[in-house]
Length: 259
Image (cartoon, rainbow, N blue to C red; front, side, top):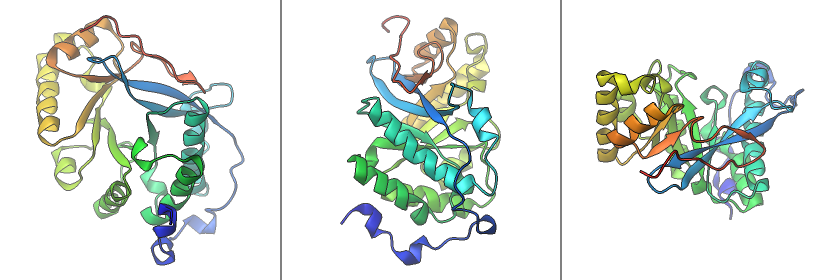
């Protein structure tokens, strides 16, 4: 029996906005991919799927069309298309997908289509990272806890994206247990000149090591940033310096030089 069949009808009950959850989308989109790179080994840790318009327009052009009436079906469709796109590009590693907690009414129900897609594509759920950005802030801590525990129970990985950007604090790490933290670019800007930022990143490396959390620094754009972060001990990086997103393709990473 597949994992999608293990989710009972009782678990799958949910309430949707105005009964419009099943309304088909009236717009189309594609995905670009950007790698997270292990700069010590030169290997790609994961490829992040980023929603784009049909001509490569930025994510905002698509997300601006998402509202309460189509958020659920968009989230579900985006997951499925991201996985299909990654495999069509012959990627066989970790796939990172952004998801909308506001679209997850019942974690079990919302995963049924994702698990069915995994079965159809012969894709192990352990290869999938779900990124939750704190920009998608939700006051219901129990709801978030339920989402994370349900996803991890089914072998999906959870990443906290944009960590430190707005609402996040250490309470997130005591209540929730993510597999990955992606530090916001705010802590990268001018880090080579800022001892406070350097100290924070060093502390985060140590904390994540103790908690068995993979630590990613995103938004690396300059050689100076790269040099300082590597000197501090950051191993996983993402940003334009290493690779720009590629539409429906898996870009290779360019590491400035061997560390």
